[in-house]
Length: 263
Image (cartoon, rainbow, N blue to C red):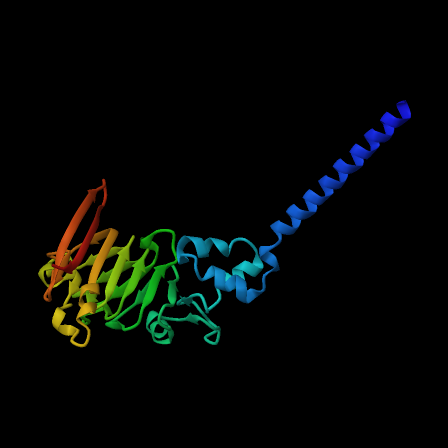
């Protein structure tokens, strides 16, 4: 009788050991499943992530993910300190990066120093993002003699950036849907602040004749953005008006949320 009981116990132990091995092997295979994908599939998955912070954080996982997450197919980079001008996807200034970008590209602007911008026209759908932890770490600077730092003629997004203009405007909106999120817009405050304005919009229903439906898409949306200087935060000369304004006063800053849209 004891021999039978012992044999049954041994069978149970063998079964439990087999189940443990199977569960370990299955969990191991499932955990490695994403790394079994080829580079093209992984890069396609990364393209659906938001550039900041999701895609940026994927670069911290391993060397392979760093290479794929920073690949020029996913975003371009602007770095003033770049030495190898032949490195794909890396440009010494913002103007050349905008010219080389394809519609839908994301341009990551390196933190530190000033990136000069004089009336740079953006005529394609782009996303410009500062690479610093705070918007103050990445500055687009426009000196006197230019109408604006950036002239926006297409739907695009600006995030985590500081845009400074000595005289004129930081952003000149002509057409398209523009989103400004987590930025700082600074203009001349004294003595010619009446000639400066952080955001100027000239969008009008008359600018789009072939497709009137597109007119409703023209506008500017501002989220969690600090605006300094200028007689007004927004100046419109077209059909757009300021709507849904919300302001939060902090100890050292004032943050704005508002839309500039057709009535």
